[in-house]
Image (tube, rainbow, N blue to C red; front, side, top):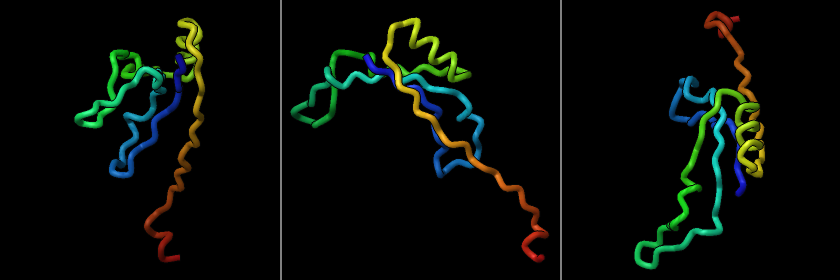
Amino acid sequence: MQAKIYKPAKTAMQSGRSKYNKWILKISDSKNQTKDTMMGWNGGSNTTSQIQLQFKTKEDAINYAKSNNLDYEVLETSERKVISKSYADNFK
């Protein structure tokens, strides 16, 4: 099984970033998915693709993947650069 380790990005509709400081380990197993003929939805009997674990640090997620013999891929994210400006700077 393949696992992805990443830090989720903030959505454009939200200004807060408090929920996005955790690392996610998501197991992807797409080979056992079947397509429902009536509705067209993807489904299957294997529920491991629904598992999404949260960790405080990237190293904790990597250690979990190593201890459970999971092949993992770390997706690095770029940090947001905050430029603090004052309102008075608009009139300089």
